[in-house]
Image (cartoon, rainbow over all chains, first blue to last red; front, side, top):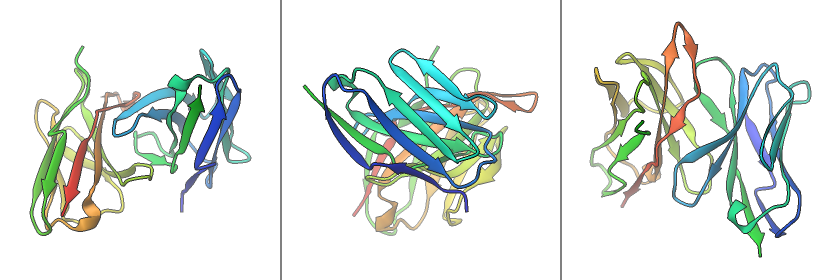
Length: 112
Length: 115
């Protein structure tokens, strides 16, 4: 069974800290991996998409890495801000077809 | 360019009723996927429609059904509602061209509450 797990489920940090969110997946034969942000009760905003042939992607203060052999991805957030407070979801696409398998998310709170 | 829109934003139903949720895909997109997100969990894939036909399905019972129209908008229908159907229902659209799928974009969701 293809599963995606995110640890921790919740994280609270003071403003300015650098932090790492973790995502693991059981089947390394992935097509791509995507990180999303979700604000309470809202839809999903795509942050970064990593193709299976890539090792990392960067956008502003965000950096996502992918290690297929170990079945892991990390989302690094530099210099966290209160506006970064949200739930971060990791999703794996196993076959080209936009059918995503999501992790349970990490709920991040950045305190001023 | 208009993004993915969903209607209604909120809906309250009782057990046993039927519900229809609607999704308008982003301009130029021909593929629509539906996801169910229970409170505190990640979204789960329900099914996908491409050119008005079901193109893939997750682990959901037949009482979850869908339609895609010629303009690529889509409906999700749920019959015989159960309490566990209470969730945020997300629609995502993407462009499938020459067999290749491009990145999908999500709508704001419909919050369904079953009493």
